[in-house]
Length: 221
Image (cartoon, rainbow, N blue to C red; front, top):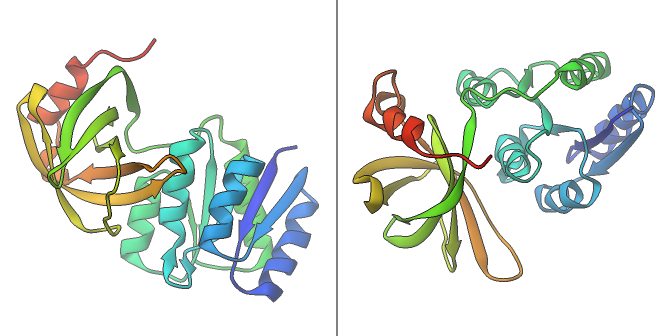
């Protein structure tokens, strides 16, 4: 059976959910904070991430997007009170969103996530055989992969941006300038930063120039 990483700032809930999940999974790892969860994702490499949407000043959806960027097959269950904006963001990214945080609902959603052959994205990403040079908010960056909804970039730091902020993206080789929204950002020990941004629906509709550019780019075999 697959492993699960459970993230919850409430110790009582965390213990109860972990006990319930232990009965249906191979192993359950737990983390009480956003930062510890990031480390646990890299160390444990779980099949499923189950996280509260609100992690103190952080957001569980941003944690899930960060994790999916490093573990492409990661399944995700987001737990939180009803919020149309958060639910839309989670489901657009292919995550389960639970409005009820009882143990039975969490176990059922986790089992459904495990049963998925592949985690769903709104659109698939295309990894490029060679990086494209670009700029994000005026900072030089390399575009690593693209999709109809956005791009993932690497920046030779320093680079700082808050999730949900607007960032201009320029890719000279494609002759493309567009306003994007920062979805996640992280850094490693080497000082290299990675950033994922999304394009507005108005820029990615069927027949749009951006979709045509994505379709024309070669992908890694």
